Image (cartoon, rainbow, N blue to C red; front, side):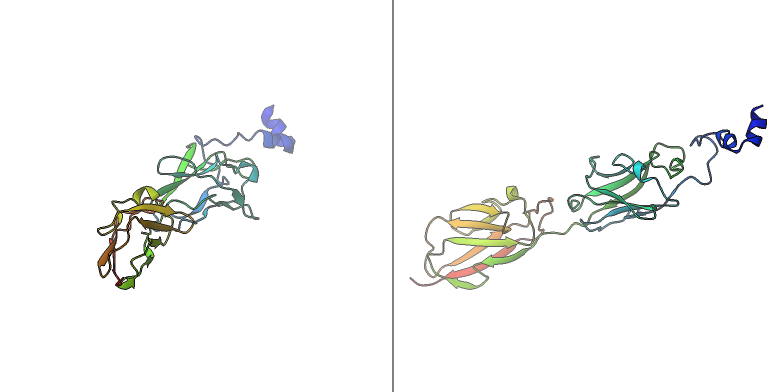
Length: 241
């Protein structure tokens, strides 16, 4: 009776088709992942990268959620950011709300919650989720872009502050009297995140006609924990009184 009814009534024929199951025979029309950017194993990726996944067929936009397409850091924490779908429904993109951390590793995952417009779930070999890509962000070491006084400069003995400006935001905890100092002088060390500048405020007047050395240790790191790698040494001389 059921076979006969299905052969007579077209709508019932559709009802007789069993639902797609990832553990049974694969539906040849099921959506699959075509490409992922950044690709698996990629290194030196820019911190501002956008993650994108392209599918073989258009997907239902309502199934694209932070749970069906995930970007995680190497500690397993999800990266927050808006998800968008291209007009043709083929490419999903995740734009991280903040730049990804330098030197860190990230992974892209999808789940079977993603479905096409016919409700057929993503074909990922019968698993609930699939790791598509693992990539690492470019690690750029910070540098010193300016020092006041400049190297080999001659300055007055009433100089009150030595200033060192970096190329990017630094970790202030690594800028201390042990890593930023002026030879033979006592002073207070501080860091201004707005200007990316470390200051050494000198406590006592400099001695006339004396050579001084500014030292910044290569162990000073940026906000992502990446060290400069090389010490910075600047020498200057004071004038006569």
